[in-house]
Length: 233
Length: 81
Length: 226
Image (cartoon, rainbow over all chains, first blue to last red; front, side, top):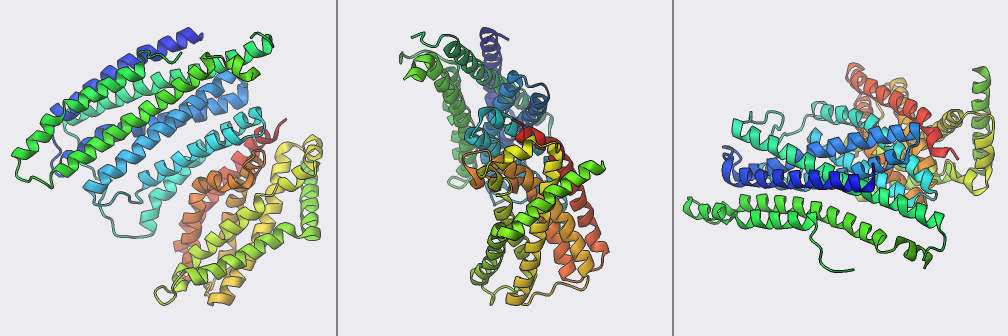
C-alpha cells in the first residue's frame, strides 16, 4: 500500500467512524431507554463494551502480526502489530477508566476482582511491557522481535490467565458484591445502541490504526531517503 | 509551518463538543425528577466516562499527528543536525 | 537426541559449577529471601493476623521476588564477559541453551525455596502440613512454570537498557496463574487438607508449565538470534 492509499483508508474509515460516533451519542443521550436497576449510569455501557471489544481485537492483531513477523520478517507486519498494540493501549485505557466509573456508582466500589476485570488489567500491562521493550531495546531489530515474542506469549498465556482468574472465586469463596455474570438481558433498543457503538469504535480504531501505520510507513521512507542521499539538504 | 490546518481530529473534537453541548436538556430533566442533589451524580459519571474516552482518543490522534509533522517538517534535516 | 541431551547437560554443568564457585546469585537470592521474611515480620501486625493463615501467600511472594532477583541475571554474567557470543555460535541449538538455562535456574530457585521454607519455619514456626511429597510436587511444577517464563524474559530484559528493572513488569502479568494455583495448593497442603482438594490446582499448574515451557522453547531463538 502506498502512503496516499493508507491515508485515504484512514480518512474514509475516520469519516464513517465519526458519523457512527455521532449517531451513537444521539442514541445514548436521547434515544435509548434507561436501564431499570442501574439507572442513568448504565449508559457508560455503550462506551465501555465497545472499547473492551476493540482492545481484544487489537491484542489479537498484535499477536497474529507478531507471529507472522517472526516467520516472514516483513517490516509491514511489525508496523501493523505496533499500530494495533498502541490502539489496544488507548482503548484499554478507555475501558479501564470507564469501567471503574460505572462500577463505582452501580456496585458501590470502583474495582472488584471479577475475572474479566482482572484479565483486562493484566492484558493492558502486557501491552505496556510490549512498548517498554521496544523503546528500551539496545538493538532495534532485536526490539521488534522481542516485542513480537511478548505479543505471541501474551496471546498464549492470556487464555490461561483467564481460566485461572475465572476459577479463583470458586476456589476461594468470598463475599460477592454483585454477580456480574447474570447481567440483565438486553432490551432491543439497548442492543441496537450497543451494536452501533461496536461498529463506530471498530471504525475509529481502524481509522487511527491506518493513520499510525502510515506514520511507520513515512518513517521508513524517510530512513530510505536519508540513506539514499546522505547530503540531500 | 505552524498554521492551523483542519484535521480529522479537530472535526471529531467539534463533533464531541456539539454532542456534549446538546446534552444539557438531559441534565435539565433531573430538576423535574424527585431528587435534586443526589441524582445528578450518575450524570457526572457518564459524562466523565465519555469525556475521558474522547480525550484519550484525541490524545492518541494528536500524538500521531505530532510525530508525523516531526517527520514531514524535515526528518532528514533533523537527523543531520 | 542423546547428543542434544549431552550438550544441554554440559551447559547445565557449566552453569551450576560457575554458581558453586562464585556463589554470587545464590548468595544474593538466599539473602533476599531471608530478609524478605524479616521484613514481613515487621510489616504484619501479628496481634491482628495469624501468620500461619498467610503462610502460603508470604512464601510464594518471597520465592517470586527472590527467584526474579537471581534469574534476572541468567544471561547478564555471560553478556558482560562476552561469553554469550561463544554460546550462541556453538553447535548447541538455541532451544537447547534455553532448556539448559531453565534447568540451572530451576535448581537455583529450588534451593532458595528450601531456604525460604526453613527461614519461615525458623522465624514464624510455620506448619507445612503432613504431606511433604505432595508439597514438593506442587512446588516443583509451579517452579518450573515460573522459571520457564522468567528465563525467557530475562533474555529479553538483558537486551534492553532498562535491564532488570523491566523484568517484573513483563513477567508479573503472566505469572498470575502460578500465584493463584501455587498459593491455593500450598495453602491447602499447609492446612493438611485431603489430596483431592489440591489436585485441581496441580493440574492447572501443570498446564501452565507445559504451555510456558513449550512457548519458551519455540520463541527463545527469536529473542537471541543475531
